[in-house]
Image (cartoon, rainbow, N blue to C red; front, side):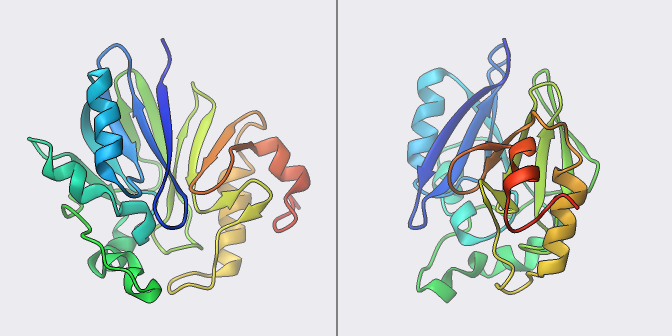
Length: 213
């Protein structure tokens, strides 16, 4: 059986969170526990999955807002992983105050992502790719065998992530997309932080913000 993926749309800006698990070992991770952590937790418990990891594509508040509720209900605590370039953003609550919100960011990240790092979840392997531009420490998670890339707020269906927030940079964002997304096989599914999923090949030919060349 292949990797199991349960998507959620949560929080004030309709953020995509992904509960993923190996169906044989029941090991689970949450990619961007956006909001309402108890909803994600209940789904994992219903399926008998053990959440051992919280993987953050980046530290904006709408991608970490559910972490505290999840961690409060689990013993031992899940391992929280984030690129070190986004630690400062995590420490200020992911910039929530800029939008008039306050969040509990949950447990401190204890695993530092690095470009080229391999993550294991049961029999599935994920490659971490550092993709700055939206935030300095933004990363994506690519699984070759599943032909899937969890791409956070780097690229969306027909759009791209904002580069006008603190730490963002447009030219860096474009370079990340061209070097780390458009180099993946064209049939790779892109599961973004907002909106519908898409494919690498579709974005290379139709994304109006970043052309392949």
